[in-house]
Structure formats: C-alpha cells, structure tokens
Length: 194
Image 1: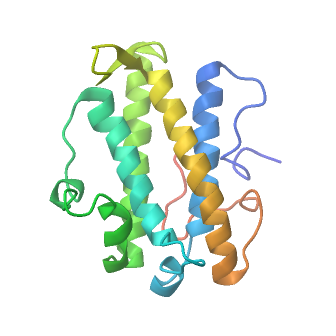
Image 2: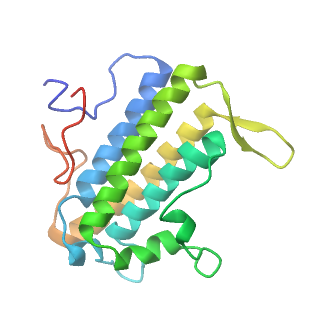
C-alpha cells in the first residue's frame, strides 16, 4: 500500500492536528466516492419518506464547509451561491435547491469549496494551530477554537456520509467503507502532493 493508493488515510502515528485533518479528509473522500459519477437521476434519488438526496448532500456539505472556513473562522461573509439563497423562506435551501443544479455544477461546487477549505485550514493552522480562537463566539462572548470547528465538521461529515452510504446503495448498489485503491473523483484532478 502506498500513500498515493490510499491518499485519504490518516497517518498511523501523527500529531493531533494531522489526525484530525486526516480524519476529515478520509470522511470527505468517502463521502465524495459515495456521491461520485452520477447523473441527475442518481443525485436526486430518495429513500422512503426522506427528502435527502446525494445532490442535496453535496450542496449542503459545500455550504457547511464554506460557513466553517469563512464566516465562522474569520468572519468573512458568504459569497455566491449562498448569499443568493432565500434562506428565510426555505431554511433547507441548500438541500432543496440542489434539484435544480446539474451534476457538473454540484460536483464542481463541492470540489472547489473543499479545495478552498483545505487552503484556509492550512493557513489557519500555520497562523496559530488548533488552540487559536476563531471569529465564531457564543452570545456570552466566548470564542470557539479552531479545534472545535474542525471537530464540528468531522461530526457533520460523519452524519452525512452514513446517509450517503444508504442513498448510493439505493442508486446502484455501491457499498463499502472506503474507496478502492487509487480512486480519484471523476470530475476531480489528482490531489496535489498525492
């Protein structure tokens, strides 16, 4: 096994930061593999009474990534498409509006957002590590740490990757815990440094 075969694997014995970022990247890779290479019908498949779709999850997780590594991290306002959504009328706008997006647009949105998130996280880690306080604060003025933001995103991916697992199995039977060796997203270039 080489790193390029399983680029998403966390280190076997690294620092706390390396393990947290590695856990996040493993969840990102598994989620993206579960959502990968589908047409509009596949991305809009639902199970039972649930309104969740893989397309909705792609857009939602892109939104969460952008929130965490912009407004919560630094206070930067959200840009397009998030600032154009009618969140007051539809609090689930990210999930629901995905049905109108093309597969290429959904994949490009998620892929680009994750790459921005990686760059912003790398810069934040270099500037102060996990213990640094970020822009996000509770109503009493206490700020949260970068560690907390990272853990919150890992939790978010954990929840939604499990849902994606069920949705993808319903679409075409794809099952498994991890992508196969050497996997790369169909619409994604190979990762720099892989």
